[in-house]
Amino acid sequence: MRSLVKWCRETEGLLAEAPDEIFAQSRLHELALSKAVEQVGELCGRLLLKYPSFAEQNEALELQAAYGMRNRLGHGYDDIIVQIVVNTGRHDIPALRAAVERILTDAGEPLS
Image 1: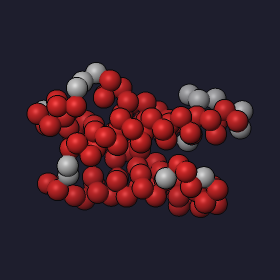
Image 2: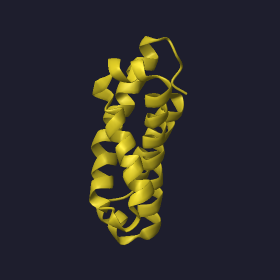
Image 3: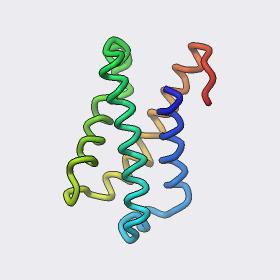
Image 4: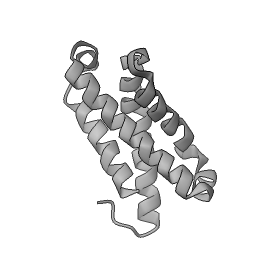
């Protein structure tokens, strides 16, 4: 779960450094953000598979939605709407990071 926090922070860091428009204008920025969001989804998918009871007990994390985004990014290719990826990174990923950090803190685990 610490890797999930790390990739959430990576995503947030990419977005903190640039306005939304740059991700539609620069293929490099678009690909960097897409990869970070995809990695978040991949890690959520691993949690779903390895710890299904955790996923059931923590439905608010929306792990399945994150994994679905990962699949879309990984297999959608030319059918990706950049603004949706940006919105996911700006809104959903910070909420996911905060929730996972609370879980780790409550369990007495370090965040990094």
